Image 1 (tube, rainbow, N blue to C red):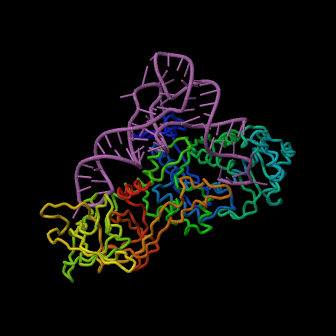
Image 2 (cartoon, protein in one colour; image 1 turned 45 degrees about the vertical axis):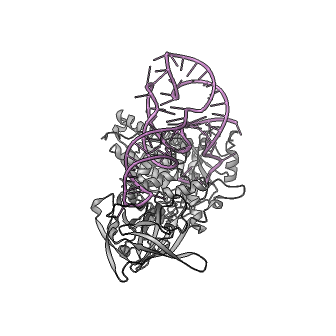
Image 3 (tube, protein in one colour; image 1 turned 30 degrees about the vertical axis):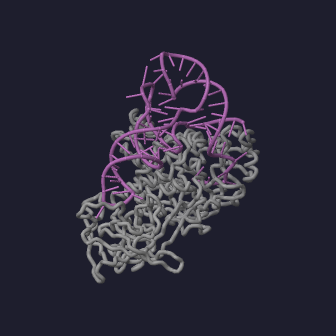
Length: 562
RNA sequence: UGGGCCGUCGACUAAUGGUAGGUCAAGUGCCUUUGGAGCACUUUGUCUAGGUUCGAAUCCUAGCGGCCCAGCCA
């Protein structure tokens, strides 16, 4: 049944489906599939495909299968299958059918026999190198293989013996007999089967010949009666071949539609290159919070909602472009602003002593947990004579436009008191290591009864009750908008940002965080959104910075410098 | 330079022959016990040249520019 179309701006794929449904094509049925190869972990680019495949089907009351495209046993592993399933679920989608291209190996084999019998496929004894040479080039047509016109009987015999394991890897292939002069290289007698004596993660040693993508994919779609087979633009040239197999076999006519793949600035979305980063230990693993993998992004503290909103906002088209990373960051901030509890944390502590505050006194101040959500309630934060504030929140000589603490100036300690800086203590290097202030007891909670204003409110943590934590600050993994843009002889690793990870070993947090659970997401007031990393242990919290808050002062500073 | 696809604000994307709109970014102001959030406002765009039409981002022609394809990878 057709659901009502979305009120959001449409896209060309939705338009196609809408028309098909209206025309009652395939009885108005909508069936899609998400077809990852289990040879790596999913990344944000896959999230786009997932949202499109599942989202569009959902919109029309259709179904989506998760199908592993496991036709290359040399690269694929069960470990990846499990991670992919978990990632799809985490993103918020449930598949209808769970399939593997390898489920169809028997059917595919039978269809190959049929194509041979129909004179549409042949066994080729050429080496890979010879096949390449016969293929021609972009501007020159290819040449027929000398084995192209073998008899059906000989082809059948040879193909059966390929399957039986009589021939070594690479010695023969099965090819579709199409047109060696086609301007579309994919149609120059593409390889359908290759000999690979490799153990498959699901079929074990049953097969020693494996179908190629082009032969397996459309047929798998057809078997699942997929109505709309959505994939990325680089498969556009394969569509004629996709259709050719379906037509020759006379099977269910799935339709392939291509859209632009996701590109993000300062980000690489290539499984091969991501794998390289992991293998060369440029990152801590697939789930390093700097990685664009779903595992990395999740660990970084992103929410599935933020990712889905982001994907929905960027649209679907056929233009090749690159989304600004700021767009993604906007959607995490938007989501976390609504749901993250506020706490106070000092990353780089500077000691403050309130000289006129009683020595051994501690007060419990009321603090709002989330100004965006009254139901989040309030909590108590201890206040005492010795505090820590952020080093950045004090300047002995404040620049123009700097409103925070400096000698003689009064500021508000959030949920605390107004304090005024009276003097500083310096070390031998002349660095300020302690700031002495007085407080106004009448400003408890942060309001002055006389109505006087302060220009700044800063966060703080009581020294005696603060808990220690490690905080990991992340910057872009690459220094260039396009990490692939490199000088002659270099590769993308030359653009790795040496400052992409900064570890702050001794941040001080308000005590309410003592029992923060792994995965918990917080806003450290005025700093950004942070989440508890799985590296945390009892008594040793580790936080990741998901994303910084927008910072008008920092932006003004940057502008001034340039 | 064979073939395929694509050109709309800085980025992404709508407008389906009839008011070039939205989001992000940037900027200005308001507000603020987060220099956060929010609110208001603003700047900037149809690749070029012709043609068809009352009317063109949209259709046609020719240019220009970009992306993809020569795996027994997907």
